[in-house]
Every structure is written in structure tokens, then in C-alpha cells.
Length: 203
Image (tube, rainbow, N blue to C red):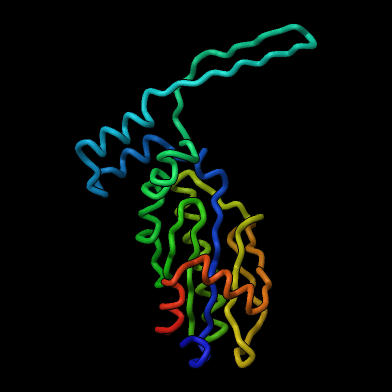
């Protein structure tokens, strides 16, 4: 286990900024062949996001005015309900392959956690910053971004773990350290899933 071996362990919990509104339809459809989406499944996905239009109506009762915009084609976004979570999962499914580090991603729609383990504090600091850089570069290439107000770093420690201050940054972006007691860590682990527990045991 990480704690018994004095191995550093932590997780970057990423929250994507308006992910459901930012899905690029052209980029999404270009990923279909890589996931073997074909036949009726492909037709369903294409019909769900293509050839959709929207317009807005603004009614001002004070000025007794009614403004209606022109119909415009929808090129970005998907509904949060119905097929939304599936579309987001397809859209970010290549995220793990974009990383060069052995960190383990756990994908869950617009909230993704990255589990990192390192043998010592110095390498831990470096690994965290490498992973954070790779996260931001992949998101930029996918026309997405992080919501830094909801993106946190959680460090798993016990009384015998040797700790030091950790600073995770990329360009002008910083991650907040989520401070919790052991019960808080337990709740976070349960949120991340059993896979996290297995990784902590293996290391």
C-alpha cells in the first residue's frame, strides 16, 4: 500500500468549464471511427446533433417590444439530459491516451479525477505539474477548459507520511488544495470509485 511504502499519493479532481455547452460537433463526429461507432448508432448520434437550429425571442413588456432573432445552426453543445452524458463520454474518451505520464485517469462525464503516485516528494511535485500541463494541453486541443473554482488537488496521507507544500500550476493557472480529514478522504475515495482503492493497495 502507498501509506506502508511511504509512497506519495494524490488526485487532481478536474471539473470542466461548461462542458455540455462546449462540445464541438465536427470534432465529436470525427472521433466516431476510432470508437467503432457505425450503423444505427452512428445515424442516431448524427441525427441528434446535426441540422439543429435555434433562435431567441426577447419580450420587453415595459417597452412593448418583441424581438426575434434569425435562425442559426447549432455547432456546439449538447443537452445535459437524454444523450448528453453519453456524448460527453465519447468526446473525452481519448483523454487517457493523450497523457504521457503513468497517472491513472478516472472519467466521469464532466468531472474527471487523475490519480498520481510517486516515490518521494520531489518527484511527486514534478509529476503533478507534468500531469496538470498535459490536462490543460489536451483540453485546449478539444476546445474545453478547466473550471479552476471547482478543480482541486487531494493528497492522501496518514500520520507517518512525510509531507511538504505542494504547488501545482501551468502558465497562470493554479489548483486549490482540498483540505479534508480522514472522513473527507474516505468520501472522496468513494466518489472516485473502487478503482482508486485498488490502485492505492497495489502501490
